[in-house]
Length: 200
Length: 200
DNA sequence: TTCGACACGTGAGCC
DNA sequence: TGGCTCACGTGTCGA
Image (cartoon, rainbow over all chains, first blue to last red; front, side, top):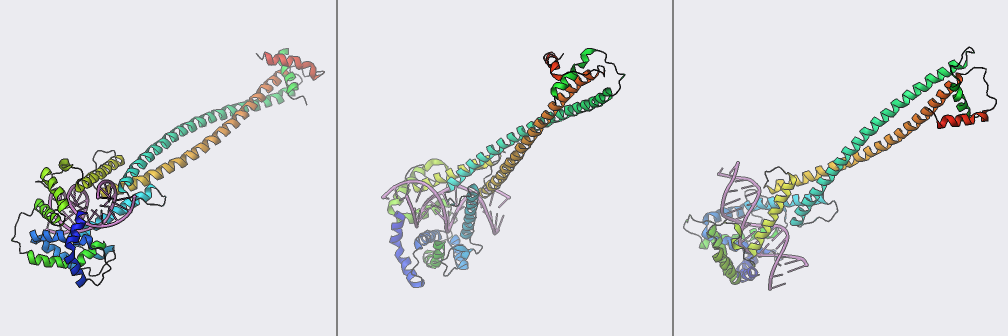
């Protein structure tokens, strides 16, 4: 505000200059430049050396008519441009981080919020991953137990099957010889059982 | 961007200004304070109001040492101080993010690297979590299958057991004289009941 | 008007 | 020595 006013106070000479050299009167963006120029003017006034270098870079980058943003002054050697490039790269990282954070379209631009979200999401994902890992552990243990039980059952089943087959053979064998004499009457009860189980 | 370009566009007049006022004898003490003072001088020249506040601040903080940091000028209302506070807060976020990123002690200070790491770790955790989730799914399916198989085995085992026991009874029964022929199955039922109730 | 968020150019300091 | 990262103060813009 104050600066702006003061800029206006001192901007007249620049306006004059612009009216001379600038064939693009539709350029309304010289506020900063003017301010910067003023600062630089003073800096140069007091530091001729730095002013010289600044002069150089201004000359070398030239940018006679370059209203369009981009890397018009990507010319190396210019510290300000390099710094701006660095800032742009940083902002790209921010955007990238933001897009990774939430694939939802609208990309935030608030750096503070992006960092905060990143911290939050990072912690959430960490705990989530950890929880899944624990669940996995338990599931695998359960699988292990189930497999063991299954094996046990299978063995028992095989054993029973073997017993059954053996007994089937035994039954066949005992059914034929007429000379066979049972040792004790109680042993005949099963026959009754069989009758009951397979009445038909 | 535009400002910069336009700034360059108009930079020559500054050079001219320099050529006017420059000639400055090579003073070798152009340290920051002087620079700041110069800038402030210009600011004041252009903005008497803000310059007053700024002066105050400078007096109160003194600022003999440029990067003397800390909150010496925590004076509210000062834009520069607020901006610095904002920067500090942002840096805190960066540190926090970094510590979340790698609990390993050494905290990085490279913002670009921190953001890059954040993006990387975020993606890694995402895929990791996703993988765990898939594995969980498969493990649960496997458990389901195993349980089904186990149940099947148990049923088969029970059936075999029943068969076996039946056959055991049968064997005992067949041990009786081959000439024995039961007159009627129903007559033997009580005996079966007795057997069932007192199997031993 | 004021305040927050950014971009800017620049000096400091570190390899 | 130059190129970098950062801190700084400031201008701008939108709410």
